[in-house]
Length: 315
Length: 262
Ligand SMILES: Cc1cc2nc3c(=O)[nH]c(=O)nc-3n(C[C@H](O)[C@H](O)[C@H](O)COP(=O)(O)OP(=O)(O)OC[C@H]3O[C@@H](n4cnc5c(N)ncnc54)[C@H](O)[C@@H]3O)c2cc1C
Ligand SMILES: Nc1ncnc2c1ncn2[C@@H]1O[C@H](COP(=O)(O)O)[C@@H](O)[C@H]1O
Image 1 (cartoon, rainbow over the protein chains, first blue to last red):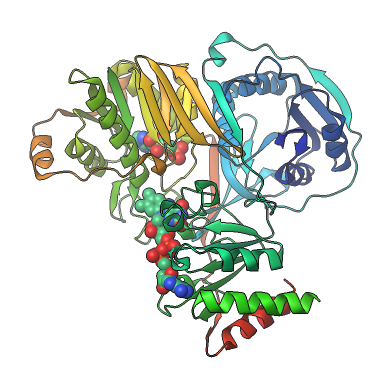
Image 2: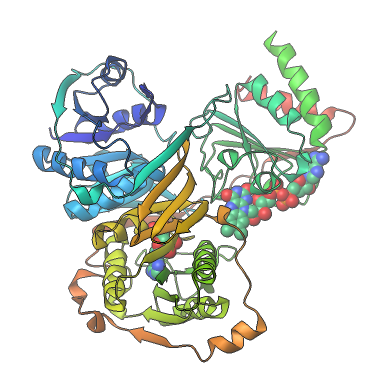
């Protein structure tokens, strides 16, 4: 079977969960080969192996670390030429999508972004128009390059051979023109990562700026905290918390929207959540059209009371 | 300085967006407009022009059906100097590869500018890949998803909220930039702007004007194929309760427990 290249998304030697999901999806198309930009870091390679990587290409990133996407696309092009893979899978994020875009042009290949599933034979499912339609498509030219949204598959902890191979890429000067001048890693909130979380509890303008009820419920449920743009624009939460068209797109098992009206741009970021719950004091709020369960009420009283009951049940 | 802003004509997101029987996006039956997210790119281009002085020229470029001229016109009303619509039946149904090819060839015909500016994503496809593809095709650096833009001569620095870090990205012009809605509100066309736009140059080009082979674009030349589109089944109406004296919290807790979230 052909190899399937999975581009690893790792931060400080920690492989992020969406990469493990890609390894599981890759098995449907061929044998998973992880591509890691970094040093030979056993914490990373062990993890990739444990989740099914048969091969692990380690591309030394010393020379390309400070540059944006273009060098990675160049290295991947060379790896695609060497391995003729059945597909290249990347995580749908800023970086994954842009590497994919450049790689598609370089290799003369079709591209599919934001897949939520991949079936045998490479048919992908996407959710479009703010989640109102599902689309099935397939790459018909070149090496399928597919970016997959986080939470689209369950990671499978079945070890692969995990054979590590160093790959040396030749990087052109023209790929080294956009420089990462400074990077401030996001401070950990101590809660799950928004895009990876199984449960997301969000607050909007209806919080009036007081996120305590939101955070209390989130912690009781082990959830990530999100926000509407109105809450972000008001300065109550940083932009990295924003859920929606111009923020994060999340697809958790449970999404709880509090004091959020449900504008189309917000829906675009959460409509594919498996279960949707809303608390809003306006029974006419459009968010109620989406919910599995809704409470018409004031979040400032409903959420603390519910949090207390949940804590009690957990004992 | 020369700036080309890529503006897309998209179906109105608040209307009922649909697919045609050939699985392409219905761009005719639904009212269209200049993609909201591209207004931010136009705004930033105009601010850069205002900062750089009067000899800066901002050209709005759009690939789309004839009706897409509305998107170009809106950019002119906001303050762009020139508009170009590339419209050709052969382009209909193009994927990102076809669209980025036509955009790149149109940009070459205009003359590769100091800055190619894009929105962070189109509101219909939301691929966020066209800017990177343009950078690849034009062999330019990309500084993308900018939330703050700073320029000094030909040096550009942007801030962006990356996937895991807040980053500052720097590069030298010419380059491709994409901007987010964090860059600040886009201006509304003023009455004066609307009147002035009527006199601004607006050209329509076809593929032959660009010397692009029609075989390379359009639905049939697409490098990916849509096999099926389906409207999401309407969500079954959920249960909605009204909170009275704490009953809402209890019902919410019961629901979460019944679904095993507790
Ligand atoms: C280009 C563009 C991109 C955008 N991108 C995004 C995006 O990515 N994400 C996003 O979220 N939005 C986005 N928006 C904004 C979007 O259109 C809405 O303006 C925004 O989502 C509204 O946020 P909200 O629901 O918190 O506020 P509102 O619409 O003001 O709703 C507040 C809700 O809170 C309820 N409420 C008030 N007090 C209480 C209380 N005490 N208890 C319970 N309920 C209460 C009200 O009944 C109301 O329904 C975008 C807009 C544009 C133009
Ligand atoms: N048909 C088009 N005409 C002009 N610009 C476009 C077109 N398609 C995409 N773009 C530009 O590329 C950006 C990203 O688009 P996308 O990759 O489709 O999400 C948009 O915000 C536009 O600036």
